[in-house]
Length: 195
Image (cartoon, rainbow, N blue to C red; front, side):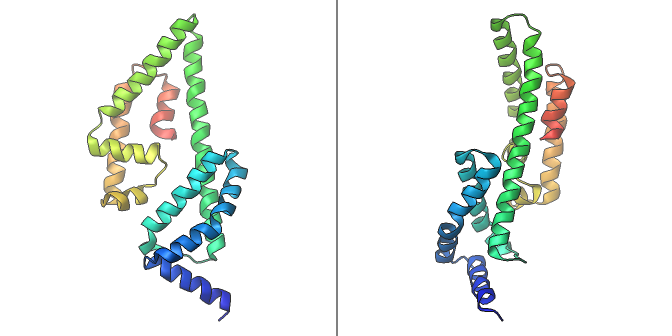
């Protein structure tokens, strides 16, 4: 068995068992390279650092269920690539929402009215989200605004994936009802389905 394979197996097993020294070693060994890699995709250093730090946080948090069928390097870079692309997807959606808001502002006449319309829309979105049941709201925000997948939320909250999906579905139904009178249909679709 090649020495490099044995070395990686020791690192993976140690990480899975909660060896903090191995975790620190992997963090310091790969961190800079992963940040540079992510930066080339997202084109913002602070965002790249956040993505990599979040990856390492979740790596440690989910260590007991860690399954790596490739090299550590490939696994790390693949995971950071996916997270970076997810960020770009959410950023694109944010631009679409802002574009929709600009259409609304453009039809209101003057700058003061534009500001009031935007403020009203943003306030209604916040109010609608705050009206969600506490657990439902927490799960919805983790999924739609923090980018966590249902399986990740289920583990983090110690609930089933089906329960997570139920909370998300309930949140979407409530938000559609609460915001229907305030938001253009396309923007409503983006908020509740496109994130």
